[in-house]
Length: 426
Image 1 (cartoon, rainbow, N blue to C red):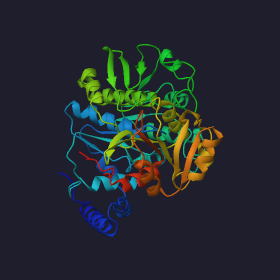
Image 2 (image 1 turned 135 degrees about the horizontal axis):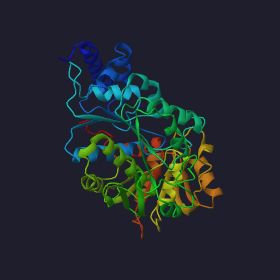
Image 3 (image 1 turned 90 degrees about the vertical axis):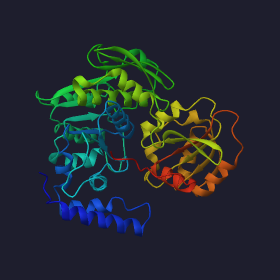
Image 4 (image 1 turned 45 degrees about the horizontal axis):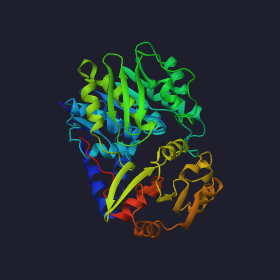
């Protein structure tokens, strides 16, 4: 029988949630988690460790949100009931707040398995209290310089999370840091690797965006491999069942690698119940993940959203833009504390940007100018910039494209009246 020891904390957390939403509609979502974590420090770990098929953690520098949504889709296609978190709730207080939405007063959440996107820094902090069956590691990239000072630091954080896996660690064999991390894991944990073939890698002379790419490719038959890539179509080879086609939710090699991570994690979670055909069909039916190649219609205008969160994702997304895209606005906000963070990105592929906006509008406009990208207008006020951008006639080729940082995405969605990133937890 489940204990009621957490009932007072759950009730207090829910009351705080109501007050926070009353005080700030649409905001304050992490406050209940802060309160509950303070008065019941074991609540988060005890709840997450209590699912029948265990806990699956997805973490890494980039691709966490997309990989998590892909994995959830695959597991649900196999008939499982999955508890998951929003991509904005990937730190301890956010995770606790997400649990409060679903947990009973006895600390029970209906579901077969929990699949959580976890911030690498906060994940390492709470990892010692968790016992995940499966940990999936996406990559190590040059990331937020105010939090993750160097790649060795990120790899160390990921190693702490991976060390908590009880059955399987799924990792990217093309990432040298993760390939090295595999050697530190004990013999009681299975390591499941995935990677791209040499032929696929050769299509991307700028690389895959990792801080350090491994020199050798994963040998055939030793794990999942990306054997083909064109636009939104990928070909994946399973050691047990051969090659299967997958339609990706957005363009780009990074989305294909995210699919590999999700497929590897699904196979580790489901074991003999895993069906590659079912998994690939589920991935092919997925819509774009919130802000990441997402296409929306606002006022009759078709808009594509492109989220950039670190230099590598910025570069990969610039490289993957549809040829002939002629209407682009770039919105870089307060989350980019030091604009030099993006200087390694070669933005010359954008060619022509109509408006640079956000708190760092002048900074990104200067970088674009140095890369010989023509910028027609600098407008720091995001609503003003968006109104001007959307008032333009439809482009002759491509769709209106908004490239934004996380802060720019929040401001854009709020101004356009789009729904928040609230997704079902079960």
